[in-house]
Length: 93
Image: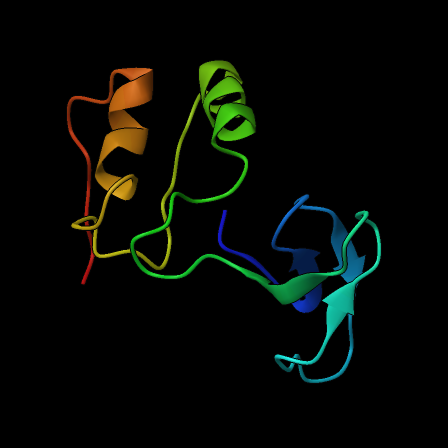
């Protein structure tokens, strides 16, 4: 949902690559015709989380959904439990 710190992705094609070092503005992906900048394979605030289609498919199959590590205030986290028709979410602070 939020990406992986040890990967980068091409800002043009979206191709994901393993990466163990720091990412700089000089690092380019050579998977495209013109080398495009690489970016960390993480979701920045305001971007849509990754793999939402897969998440919704998994939610359709689950019997119990437990959200850990979220305040439940930043979209799409609050909507995930309602995808399964949850009527009584329990939040522990």
